[in-house]
Amino acid sequence: MTIKSAQARSSLALLIEEKLGYAMIKQAKPMQSGGRYATSNTAQQTSFFVQSQHSPLKRALKRQQLQKIQRQQNIEAVMGMSLSLCPDVTSRGRPDPDWLEHFISLAEDIANHTMQKLWAKILVGESIAPGTFSIKSLQTLKLMTQREAEALQKCASLCGYLEKEDSYLIILGYYKKPSILDLLRKGSTETINLAQAGLSFPHILTLMDINLMYRQEIESTSLQKGQSLTLIYQNKKINFEAKSNDLVLSYYKLTQTGDELKKLINTPVNKTYRQLLNKTLEEEFTLTFE
Image (cartoon, rainbow, N blue to C red; front, top):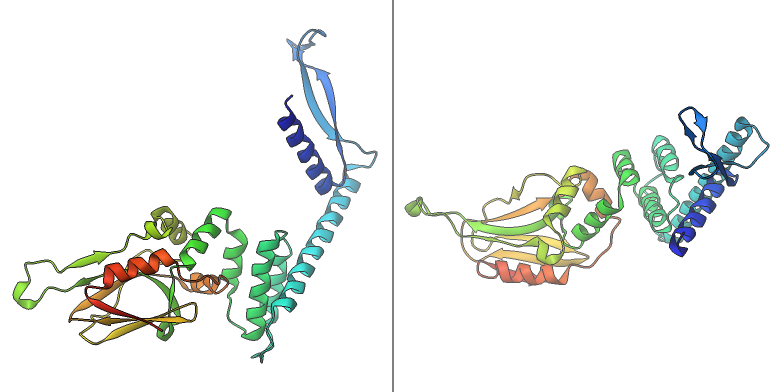
């Protein structure tokens, strides 16, 4: 047995003992062959069993007690963090009792410190403005894998907030509608390669699969010369003003659940994405940063 495999087995044994409340020991017994036990020269089968004189029922009760202790520690950690994170502002009311019970039943299983902080932010947000986070968002966050969380993290740095729709979106590019006199000619189109800013197509598909992003690209209304669209990126506004007529912006839009979970992630606008916005839109749009 190599050192690495020995370390892995030792670590696993400690983990199992921590969760079961009992250590497991090894027992080797001869393997059967043709209905009879093999000789001492043949291979042996190794099995592990719990080292305890307690009955399975008592062992099950102890494991349940350990789970309750861990869950209590988890929810206490989340609530302690929420008090540390809560700003000194006026609350709009108390969270709905049913919402709070759902929150506790889900958050008590969260042992990872980073994830506990996210749950603490949810409790703070809901305490300040009840209705900010839906139960569906809580369930989505609870089931989210590391890969899905990474995709949301990368997405968040590209999202602009559209105040009039209370929603987040990612600008993809634009196209110019062909004039009536030139209908046979396709209007000019410019598209941003989001992978260059760290958001790959598999990331996008992942967000769509867990219902954080709509599956179809969405288009703005046709913008005429002088009309504009304003997005907010981490408290900084970017104004997109059309230089000519019949310009249409295309974008990905987050769903309601995506909007709610995006609020938990405070990241500055991706610098590469900002450069790509300038380069892609500069011919037909004036970008003003406030």
